[in-house]
Image (cartoon, rainbow, N blue to C red; front, side, top):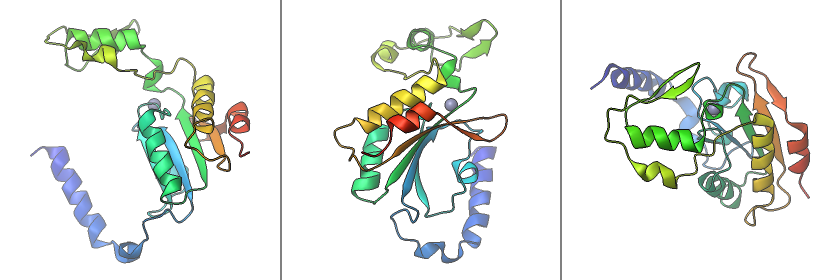
Length: 193
Ligand SMILES: [Zn+2]
């Protein structure tokens, strides 16, 4: 096993040793809200939003985008588990700003190895084989954070499976300051009706 694997197991042993009354937490989030945010390693929603175990749902993907699967989770979040307000939180310096569908598809068609990036953009080692399967995926890249937050709040707000009374708030997390900055027109568009 890898060093990272061993570190994770050791950390878990410590966590479980001090588990305390978390064994008695109910499944539904105690504070009745959900956050959709990016998987970026610099973001820790539990810390930036003050969450403890049992408080809230956190749905994460590349970009924090309102993909079909993110919406699937949000619908389960309120329909079965009672959340009543949602946050869409994208962030500054997101990796999803650094490429387009065409770039990603080209990199994957060239090889499946990890690509490299420099000032002139993404480069592939070319040590194939690659795959054209990437052509069939919408990578949901982000040319502009304010726009992507607004777009995702609107998609959620207007989704036929999302009830009108759930407010959807739009924010951008600043990786330089740790602050959540509201995208005012997104929160406005996400207002409960
Ligand atoms: Zn990101």
